[in-house]
Image 1: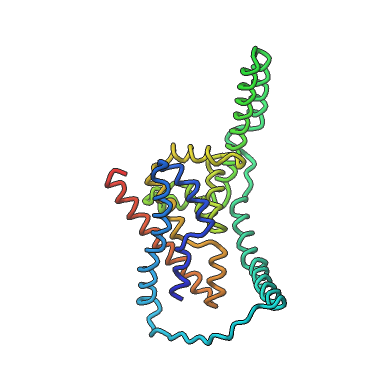
Image 2 (image 1 turned 90 degrees about the vertical axis):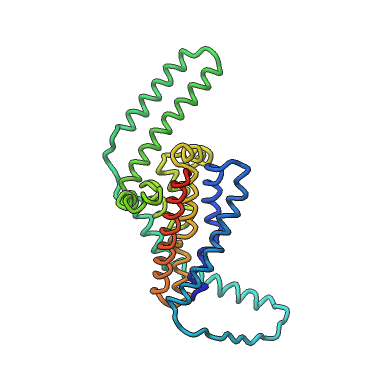
Length: 298
């Protein structure tokens, strides 16, 4: 049980997506390898005291002895391999078709509804106006370079309007409103409502945090990488960027981990306990890190 509870502290491939976005955004090239190693090492080292605390304060029972009888090893047959693969695949499909699907649908609804019908600006009219203005400037352009520059500027202006419309839609959803409600709790960690909304989306899958940040900052999903990094760098400090990675590393596991914990422990109680313990640890560690960083001038 103690091992299961701290397994999420080992960085997975989904979290690597978050690190790949934030480390280049906030740290110079010479620091990037060290930061990646450090964030992985923090998870491993933090698992030791957390597991010890769970073992001593939560479980409170004498250690059990593991006795395993090892069978004779033989070269696997094709039939054995196929049966094993089928059993594992069937178990995953059963899991994906029940709890994972239901949780994903709920999170999708939270990130998509209610739909916003009235906006702060008439984005359709503004897009038409930008296009007409671009055409008028193109007619006056004299060189191919000027025409190319005007066309690119017009396309960028229209794209910005569309992204701003998507951002207003995202802020109007259940997840967007929840991010605003959580703002008083998140501010001591250096987070704002956009990070809060992204962290809610990360419960579906950790890598969703990156996509959610792109939506919050009205970035085009096709070319959001470098542009989003530049926007994050201009909006937050390296200390805040590190705290985002730290919280994503330790906090609430994704739906898949939550489901597997329930399956392996046979109890919803342990799954919710894991969620609560790791999120509480994440809050305390991130708060102390952000507070210490500010005191040290970070």
